[in-house]
Length: 148
Image (cartoon, rainbow, N blue to C red; front, side, top):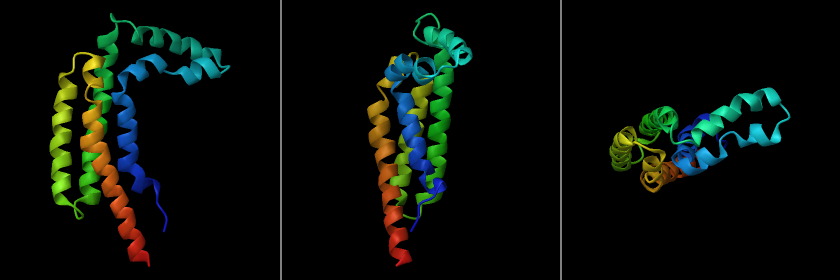
């Protein structure tokens, strides 16, 4: 039995989105790979002003709106993929994930700071990431059993 990239998409999106919820680390470590480890000064020179602005309270709103849009878009994709892939397995879990996901979307949209997003991280992990991962594991087990 093999797992494809498509099979991993809901879990991968959850992990990517979870990184976005960790706003403190996002702001502090923004593009550190390019800035610290790359000899490409052209890229570094383009990124430094962004990194400085991201840490500045006077520019926070500029970056916050884009960050919120990325999170909302990812949660929407997670809900869609999860429903399409796992509804046949456990409809009650899908309904709970959908309800909790929509609630999180509303809270992210209403966030007025990166800190407001950061406090939603545990909810995202417990209400979205873990149930999606559990359903992914269940689908892998079912696939393995059907191959035998």
